[in-house]
Length: 279
Ligand SMILES: [Zn+2]
Image (cartoon, rainbow, N blue to C red; front, side, top):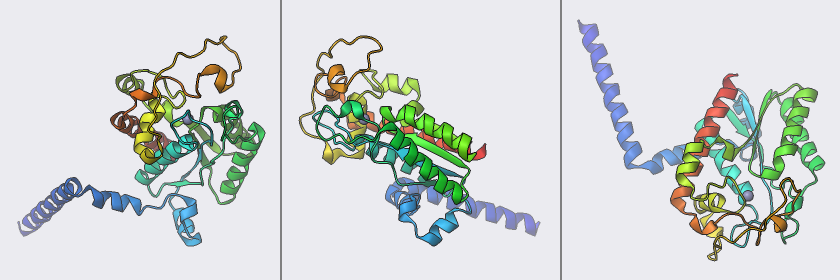
């Protein structure tokens, strides 16, 4: 009898504690954000000893791939890099300490954007070799599962080739995914008026930009302009596909749309990485 009431009393106390934590989380979201921010997931932020400790629990390493390329007259060159880094960091923090993130690759395969100033492009073979060298280093430290999370369309084919080579030559388990492909179609359809995903510097990327780098967006966000017609299958440069280096209608972008899109991308990546960890 005494034992039962002791157990009841513990259950009652832990229930109250749980309710208190739920209340604190709701009342002071900064406390939770602060706790999450303490979770170091980027290798570059860790000391050697912190990395060694993470190796005891980390099962997947993520390589984020971005670009440095023109994004119309209104978005910064680092748009793809900033968005993919944001999505990867949020998902990895949620999965802490099971996921480690290497420094994002800031320059991608963007020869078709060189027609506008500011774009810096790697050759596709350079990008593949960079990814392979990162994979070799991670393999050396004991990682057997690597996810390439991509933020730029042009990196798609080179990332696929690099992942295939890493599997064949290094015996690694690999995942390659572009962050926008993780957002459920029904969310994209409900949020986007233009329905263009990911497009380029359009409603989609500009909306997410309002969440990730609001201070870097120019006040002259352009409206839709009629795109030039182009032969199906033609290997285009961006100035042949668009009138001013952007697609769709960036003027339809809002922060609210961006929040829904990026939250769905983070959730999608979190689920995918969790499944990969369990594989
Ligand atoms: Zn982009």
